[in-house]
Amino acid sequence: MIPASTAPQKGAAHAAPDTAISTVYRGLILRRYTRLFGAAAILTALIIADILTGPAMLGLTEVLTGLFTPATADATTRVIVQDIRLPMTLMAILVGMSLGTAGVHMQTILGNPLASPYTLGFSAAAGFGAALAILTGFSLPFLPWLTVPLSAFVMCVLAAALVFSFSKMRGMRPEIMVLAGIATLFMFQSAQSLVQYLAAPEVLQAIVFWLFGSLLKASWNNVPIVAIVFAISTAAVIPNLWQLTALRLGDARAAAIGVDVHRLRIRLFVVVAFLTAAAVAFVGTIGFVGLVAPHIARMLVGEDQRVLLPMAAIVGAIIMTGASVLSKLVSPGGVVPIGIVTALIGVPFLFFLILRGQRRHW
Image (cartoon, rainbow, N blue to C red; front, side, top):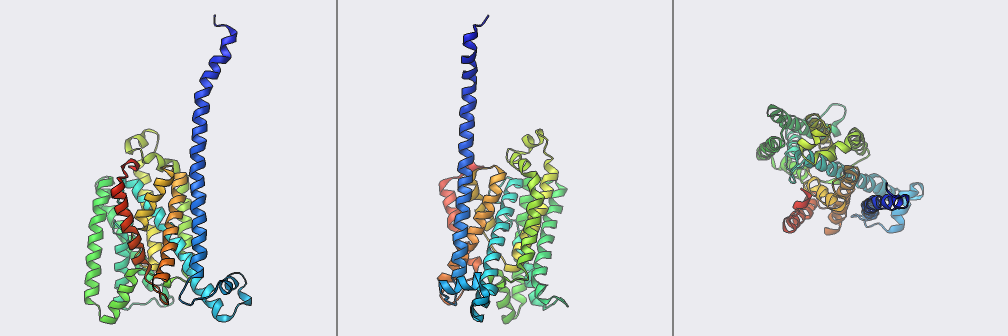
């Protein structure tokens, strides 16, 4: 018989490892949420900086007055702050969040570090749709301002349907989806080139400006549309966060714990298509955000989708608002297209990833 005096000692011995594991886990969670709130603080600072900067060279007092008490501001300041700068900033946040989230979804369901809405042809398809609408001069009868964005949106969704159709023929396997996406990318890039070749010089200028990507198209008409699509897409994914985390372990392991991998992959693919279509329809082609933001978020908080998704959204918004600030500082008195700035930011980071050899995240 075991002496009674030894029982508490054995119980304490068994409890010690559990306590240590619990302490380590709590520390890990604390670090992740600390970094999440730190990223949110950086985004807040960039939002303020983005509203403060611009070709009009308004002072801090004028901007704050136009932002918080527009009734007391003069008409010019009120228009610049409320009708130009604020929609541009909100659009930068929404587009960054949409592309960052879409990039995480793409990399998760495909298990590929190079997967993103841009590299799989969705953005190229949107560009072709917009270019085609500009070339033909077609205009919607009651909402002419929505013609080019709607054309870009529809073509982006059609590109997603094309990739989906080819992938479904081969069982929705990740490698088939990647190959179909790359083929779609080259096809729509070629179609873009053909449209530009056929366009007159003045039409070509409008097409190229759209393809560069610019927040100058943001307005109170289109900001709510992007916000609604992002909100619905996010709500549709929240119930599947644990399944997405499990999917990073591989299809076989995810299926072993009850995840319907095939159905989840289809659902996420549809969400990515609408997120991307809404994001690029109003601002033009934006590259690298959907590719870079998930990598940064993954390095900061790991693979837990409960933290990874909001971090990727915040990092995407940080990249877009930071690029917006830079686009106005690089050319005083003007605004450089933000698509150029995001590419200049994204390329060095990809080289950094290559040099660091971030294989542990995959």
